Image (cartoon, rainbow, N blue to C red; front, side):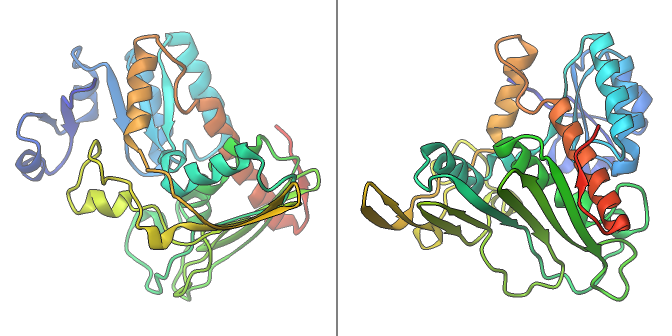
Length: 321
């Protein structure tokens, strides 16, 4: 339902080799002046999101912006209000909602096979011992692992459990040359439920991606959704194998229901990043709600702000707007 029309780039030759049918612009204003474009996708450094999204909205364009939404919740509030005034759609590309492991975890929670949940752990660990020369690892607004990977994990937690009641955070730089945080440990409080979100840059042998413990049993899932690597290899959605995981990576469930104990693997659901854009099309033509609402992405940014506050004050902070 979408056609790639134009790209703003300083490397037009490189773009046209892959997308010969598109128009290339060397200036953002020129793109926004193109009346044939309905939807603008902003995939630039986080500290530029606010201005680029604001300009697109003011030109009457629907906008998708790469996560994290903005640097501050105040910026998010301003963009949400502006999109409402101009009656355009505003969404944030939280693609990890369509990861195969997250979809599987979501199904397990909806089935209540674990009973009342007590502990939910989600890790997105990496082994990158050398600091790279890129904006995400420089001392800039919106940089660092908390904004980068934290926005994924926080969004997934809020999608599952809603707004947390409390936030606790431990942030640090594990690598000597790091200019911003490259490790975080968050604890989100939901009554008696604790949601632990963690990412480190020096994890050569990662543990489970997800761990769930409830009154009836537990579920653990190792490995990582294959879609990102598949796209790098040139594979595309809408094939029978895209987003499908090998059986060896299936998660393990052990639970007791009505005095019967079940132990075994759980088939991982198929990942589907394309569903996000299908939802965008349906929202633009007025047939469904937008797949990732800007107000939900704003809650992610507010949680990051509270996490920074918690770390600086070395205490648990209550959720507040």
